[in-house]
Image 1: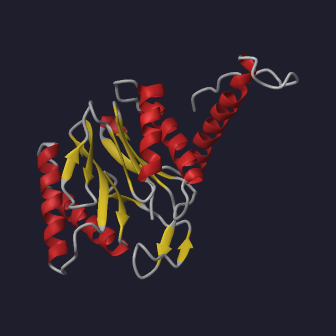
Image 2: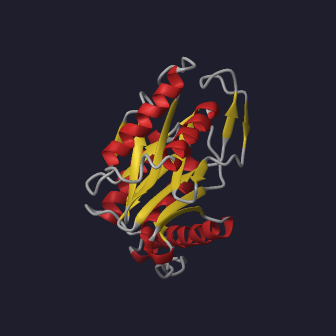
Image 3: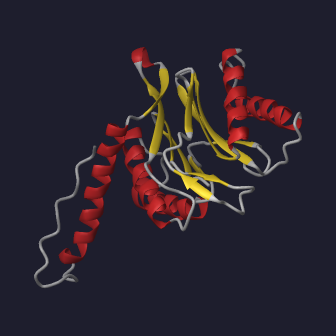
Length: 253
């Protein structure tokens, strides 16, 4: 079971997840849960992949994306064709061993020139959807029913009708994953994992996993924001008469 979140920003792409892994004969009958599984992969320092579903399918999906990238099948085409090529290659691979549809879905962040693209491959049938300035985020996994309302809240409160920059995106992604991990009934757990596809040397887009220290820094900013929200009732006179003044608004990380 999984939480997977992707945000296409004005200057890159963010993909985050939880760290839980469940064992069992099928998804409906989990037996044990293990934590700290790496759910996000970086391919050749340029592409980010995160999936939900069977681990074996995830391994094969990453292998096919790596093959297409190294064969330069994704570098010079538009994002719709990128999605088509990945979907075709993975479905053909799955058909070769009679994998039934519905067992795996994924988010992929891939560079196209100076643009960072986010493509969703649906859990039902691996059909691709390219994220755009009108629809720039996606969630997947067993915790999607928790993630989606939080994403709707983020759009209404933080983003409006425009994608965020990476700084705002990382803050909101951390906030959403932290709350979703706390609220999900079962099968998900921290720590938060995060990867970015952003400009690096000479403006070239590069993919990397955030370090644990970087994620802790973002979590500290989120905790400060939550403390600020908790103190807001004192500003409205709705708190205890002895309540302290509301804390100052947190600074951006």
